[in-house]
Length: 112
Length: 112
Image 1 (cartoon, one colour):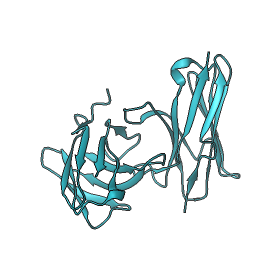
Image 2: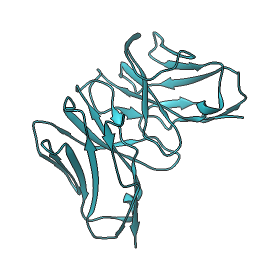
Image 3: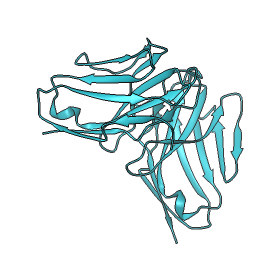
Image 4: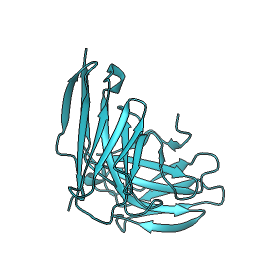
C-alpha cells in the first residue's frame, strides 16, 4: 500500500531549464509535505516543505506546489544546475511531528 | 554536515548474527528516528524515540529493537539476521518532534 508515489524513477533535464518532479499521495490525512535531496553515500537533505493550508511555497530556485483536490504535489527547480543531479524524495506526514511516509524517489540528471 | 552521526558506515555479517547500529543526534535534538531503505525504494519508518521514550512504531520487525539513552544517542539492534535485512539504515533527529528531520549518512548492512 504505497501512500506516497513518485511515478518517474528518473528525469533528465538540460542545464538552465526547469526541472519538475511530481508526487502523488492517497492519504487525505497527510497535512505536511517535504522534499529531500539525496546524493550517493549521503543521507537525505531537507530541501523545502509545504503545509496543507498553502498551495505554494518558494525558496530560491525551489518551489513546491500542492494541489489537495488532486492529492498531488510538484517540485520545480529553476534554473536547473549540474549540482542538482541527485535523487529527490517526496515525504508526507499526518502531523507535523510524526513519522514521514516516503516515495521511492526520482533520480534527476542535469545535462550540460 | 547534518550533525547526525551514524556508526559504523558499513557492516558485513552473516545470517543468524546480531548487530548494533549507533546514532548520535544533532546537539539539542531530543527526537530520534530510524528508517530502513532497501534497494531503490523509499525509506521505511521503523521507530521513533523522544527523550528516551518510544513515541511511535512503524514497520519494525520483532527481531529488531531500539533504545535511546540518557545522553540521547540511540542504538538499533538487529538480531537473527536474514538476507532480506540487507539495506541502508538511516537515523534522523529533530529538536522536539517537529519537522524537518535531519539525517545521518546511514549504515550499509550487508548480510552474506
